[in-house]
Length: 131
Image 1 (cartoon, rainbow, N blue to C red):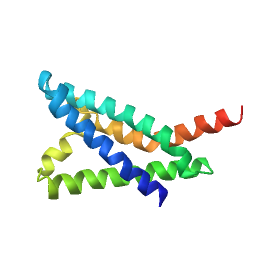
Image 2: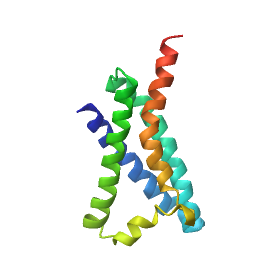
Image 3: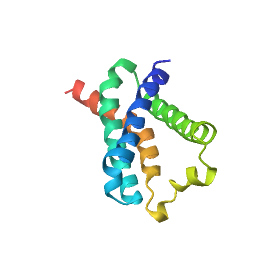
């Protein structure tokens, strides 16, 4: 239950990141550049958030950290497509656009980070606790 609740806390951070892209820095740059900046800041927010929330998750093994990453990944993709299409009304084509690395769209790196960051932070905290 804690990993799910922690993911729910991540949602408003990522929404705020998207709002900043659209309203703060996005208007002064191309859509692609704004997407790339937003992806990078999203990964940064993910790292900081995971560092802060990981002790609360009380993970006891690297496997649990991988499981958290996999759960967060699954929930994020489901949210993106289900909310994006059925609530926000975006066409499927637009939703899949952010997955096109050949066009410079780097959303896949954010998803990769969502999988990897809980394990990486777990490892860093575990090493720090044992030194």
